[in-house]
Length: 115
Image (cartoon, rainbow, N blue to C red; front, side):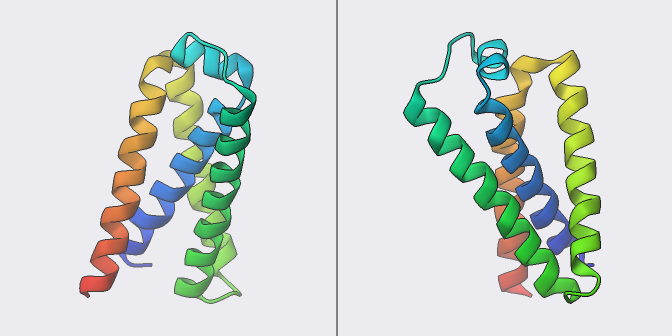
């Protein structure tokens, strides 16, 4: 797996998990101090699941469908562990970290198109 694909997959996984985390009332209130609206919850869930699906697609296409899902689960596990630690110790940084992870994913995607 090239570094660009790894950055893309890790960034997508982390950003997707952040979106799913923010779609839960408890975490949204803990992170932002407000309760999410029903429309925002639905949007965050759709974005989260779409990000996870896109990460699986990227890993499958990059590594082949026999080993790509294994790499995707690894990236997803690493992103999940990072999110749990960040949510436990610095919950206010979760949303900015999710935005940074999305930027990392976009940079990884841009590097794939250059190479």
